[in-house]
Image 1 (spheres, protein in one colour):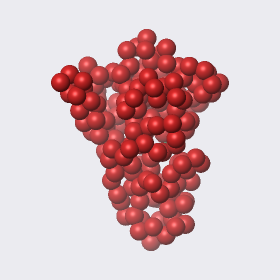
Image 2: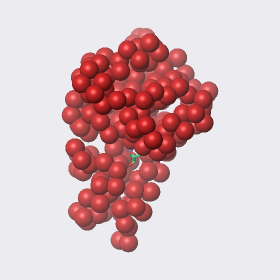
Image 3: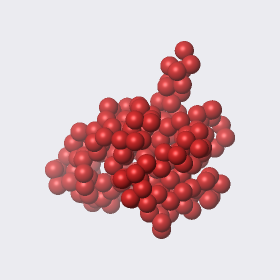
Image 4: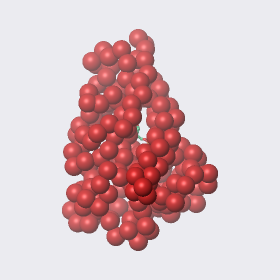
Length: 195
Ligand code: GRF
């Protein structure tokens, strides 16, 4: 059984899609949700799915141990960033080599990096008059939105799109593809460890 923790900062719609997908039918278990915003909706998502959740303070997460003891105590094998806005500290990168994934709501390497999150991404895509946008699921390294790409899916940008309508179309791709990509990625990792 692979035990994963989801790191989130917002409403948790990705966390909800992932928890629905893995609800008791896979050898992957979402064992913990960790969030850095006390009022975030993702805590309610955790409660709805009876999954333990913890709050992470910036000082401890970014300046000290990255909450690694909390993950190790729960035998967490990998981390899934789902709408998580802080850079992952080296402590966690080293503890989980090639076992941290993130999803970015654009076709990296364009429209990524610091400050490129949420609605800002879609605003930039429209300003650049792109004909398509989409999602990128990638390994996490010490830079924002920089690790090797694991998966990308595209969607059209419509002439009358607003940042909000584009965001909705991209978010639907996230919900649809992140769970199966997580499952494939970590099953492949387990096969390589077991073999
Ligand atoms: C959304 O902008 C999504 O594109 C990105 O994180 C934000 C919040 O996602 N991945 P969620 O609803 O909290 O999962």
